[in-house]
Image 1 (tube, rainbow over the protein chains, first blue to last red):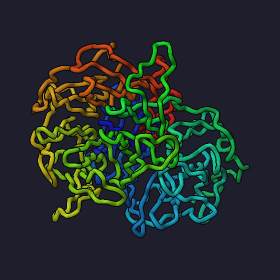
Image 2: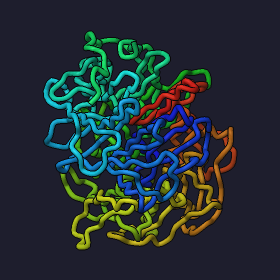
Image 3: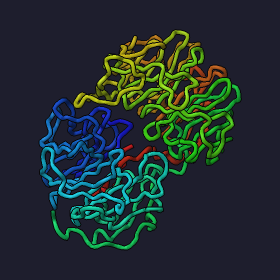
Image 4: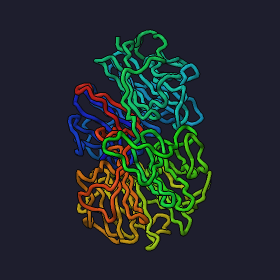
Amino acid sequence: MLGRTMHGIAYDPVHDEILVPQPFAQSVLIFNAAISGEQPPTRYIQGPLTQLSDPDKVDIDPVHNEIFVPDRDKILVFPRTANGNVAPLRVIKMPKEGAVSAVTVDPVHNVVIATSNLRGQPSKIMFFDRTAQGEVAPKGIVTGPKTMLTGTFGVRAHPQKGLVLVCMNGPVSVGAHEGAFVGVWSITDHGDVPPRWTIGGPHGVLKQPRGVDLDVKNKSIVVSDKVRNAVLTFYFPEIFN
Amino acid sequence: MQEDAAPSSGSDSAKRPPVREIHDPYPSFSSIAVDVKHDEIVMTDENLFQVLVYDRRTNTPARATMSEPRRAIGGEKTKIEFQCGLYIDPESGDIYAVNNDTVDTLAIFSRNAKGNVAPDRELRTPHGTFGIAVDEGRSELFLTVQHSNSIVIYDKMATGDDQPLRLIQGSATRLADPHGIALDPKNKVMFVTNHGSLREFHIEADGKSTMPTRSTIAGSGRVVASSINVYAIDAKGDVAPIRVITGPNTQMNWATGLAVDEERGELYVANDMDDSVLVFRTDAEGDVAPVRMLKGPKTGMKNPTGIMVDSKNGELLVANFGNHSATIYKLPAGGNTAPLRKIRSGPSDQPALMIGNPGSVAYDSKREEILVPN
């Protein structure tokens, strides 16, 4: 049930599961993380009740047992154990005809972090209460020239330290972007705030960072890069100490 | 809002190098075509973003690391990224290279193009094109479009923002993540492989636009069996296929590239996930078994995605995305048969990593493994 075009993945360390959105079939697939080869998912979310339209990214809150899926102008929240044609538990609607391109959740500080890249508008990082529902204003927004955000792709929370890591891949998805980097912000940041750290750029090794995750044990950051067509690991103890 | 959840600002770390990089240093072939007039084989490389041109008779010696191409086209000016489809003009040798998920441009190069050069002609395409075929008799160019379950048909010489002549899209078409496309002009039909992911789109009732819509109907997604859909070569609109080849007997598993052997009335299918090539009669329909299969350890195939029939030289060419190779067989190919020749772009003992547009990444902390969707 996988496809050859998938742009999201999340690992649930508590339940040892892998989550993958499959936009061409409007589904979210949940696999046992131990499997290998051609195996069916343990569960999948799909059908008219789901409201899934273009699921491209996903994140998991293993503490509160919820799955977060950005989908055009909203964030759909499903129970972790959802299977089949299941309605979302909550829908967080982006305010003022906004759009959401990626989402991650911090279950320690009860924050949902979403990024937005609407054409003609500056890129932004938005912070919502984890239990937000309906059309609500974010309680914090990071945007502006000091952020150096001219586009975003993947995003991942670092709940233990109250941080969020954002892939800044530039304004267009074609070719290399010399200003690309992975930026680190605090979930308490608000306004035109520069990243506390940048990884792999600007003018560094990253050309089009797309995905990011944390290896806490080894104090490292793992980044996928479209133009390098590669996965890079950076030792970065600063954000783990 | 939580307070003091983060540490204070750190030092400039932008230049810190990675401690590790997972990257395949060798080309991975995704599609293949022959320039019969100039005796050259052309392949797309989705790993290093190139189009590579080899002497048609290249046969990499077993002990060699790889064979060097005659020419390589690659670099920022070329607009080449994840090229997945290829067509060679039989007269001029022009190279038509289809971009998939990241660049909405069909790049067309003259035969002798080399290095980091701009395409000689560009056509802005719908997002997510994959397969390509050309009807030389009608001077029409066909492209499959994954992201909108559609087929667009252009004038072969279309350029810039030229619009398609025709569009095939809609529920009746049964298009479901279309990939490869091949034409049978003699019988006036086209064949299209479908991986089986399906979602419905809001189709305009007037049918005037020839660009596919990407406006999806939420919650309409489902997975159907892989298939080969057959349409009239002049089909347009929300049109049902004339025939469909699908079902467990077909043994299709992400059937991708397609090629027609007009002389024998056979359809060759690159069956990606089964490491095989399936052969059907061109008039096959329903849940039919292939008349032959090319499969087994002697074939040297691994994740075949591109395929072409070279009628002039009586050969079948296969691009293997999974092992840095193209394998060439004598027609009519079948069984566990060794290739006549093999073109390798990397060492024979190193499988391709098959990373292609890594849109995300996750870390499995239990197994200490990195997970990469493609």
